[in-house]
Length: 64
Image 1 (tube, rainbow, N blue to C red):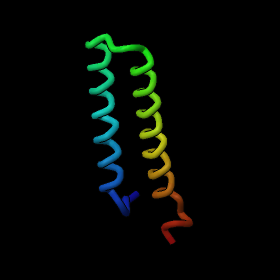
Image 2: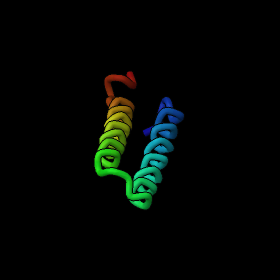
Image 3: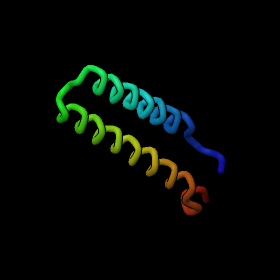
Image 4: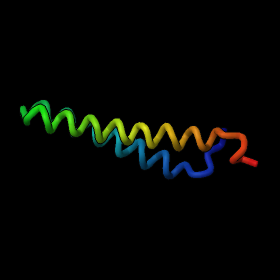
């Protein structure tokens, strides 16, 4: 499958990686659990966006 917009996938992957680094720092600095949970929710949203993007790319009706 050739991606029509690989920049979007790359950008989302970079944001997910950054979010994971941030989660590690939250744990190391012993910030409140609410901060950690909020960051997890943000990361899940990024994963959902990436999944949606990849599903749209793989949809045969959109590729014509």
